[in-house]
View 1 (cartoon, one colour):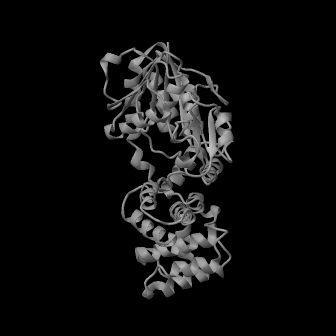
View 2 (tube, one colour):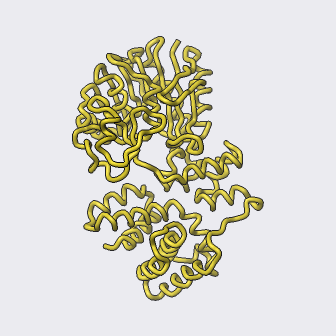
View 3 (cartoon, helix red, strand yellow):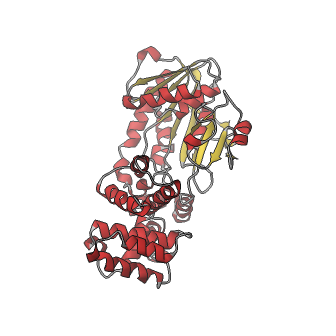
Length: 428
């Protein structure tokens, strides 16, 4: 199958079904006999059209006399696919973008699709609503996010900062590795991987290109995939040799791996997760890395385990969250209505309040999310401290990241990471 055809079909499936594009694409590519170059093009088109959908739809509305809602799914998808190539790719000639896209369409609509795409080539380029006529509408179209998300960002951060944050999410996501320093140093591993670059803040991360499984050292467990923000979260936890560490919402396990490596594979890491079917990811990952101090169990983070009361030196609560800090990696989240996540802060707080019962006196509790909104982050910490005066915020340094207030929100306009929140607490 040709790459445009594959992208065309997958984009229609994604609009019909509530699925993540990366999962659907990975399966399709695994079943395909396309060349590496064609697979790369299919990936670019699928992710690109998904990420820029609202911007593309706005351009279609300017070029077509027919409302977008009246166009059938195949026509909408073809127009988005063609316009994406015309607007956002440099290496695809306009005639190829148009002709190849038109060929995907039935004859009865191919003329219409051809006319719209050629009309764009004669236009003055991409257009957006005027900010003065509605700033959130402008943000929504310019950065291709749902209007509700644009409004919430503006409410939380103000217009100028909201736009800087959305601009930061346009950065092309890189693959980041956490080096398994039980087996190799970051410097040694970098020597074996071409184009590898050290992460700016984490002292044990590398930014790389290409398929992870094909990189030097994958089979030998010399690294695992983990964003720099998550690496810094583990560094803030500060696990040491011989300690007992609890990872309350652990899957797929990267923070448990990081803690075990910090402990030099000496001590005990208890990894829990609500979704027991995901636990094999932790088990197999630990085996590949040569880590033998992790045990994985299924458990709801809100359910108390009395046998662990006051037994942990470190407890990590990386709680389920709305995920709005990873828009660059999960483009579907751009169109998620924040109102669908309104119940999460209370669930997160319940997990945190249960987990704090496992912490020894004088020991550490870390709370984290991969979102950027205060009600899931700072506000939850405020509520927790009001109810639990036996805990206090603990200023710290996580490798190259200073956390002087004991908590920090990492944002893509100021940090080279996912959007992420870290709070370090100490039991008095």
